[in-house]
Length: 59
Image (cartoon, rainbow, N blue to C red; front, side, top):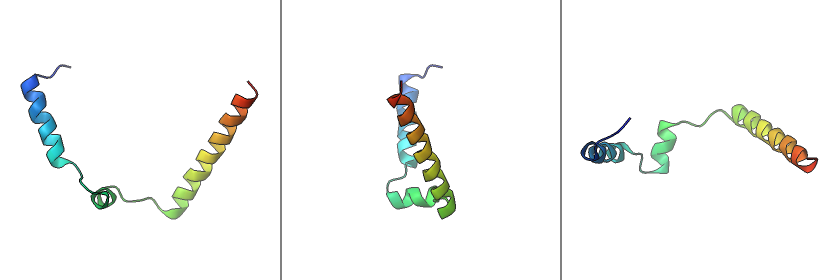
């Protein structure tokens, strides 16, 4: 897909106009997951990191 330079200017201007300007706006737009969901994801990432670290150590 190609975009004209004239069209791309107005496209990026439109994106900036709709941008979230503060962390509070971002939090309002994307609410945080529940505490248990965050804990589960942190645990998964920790285990994934451990496993990758062990693989790299023994390669």
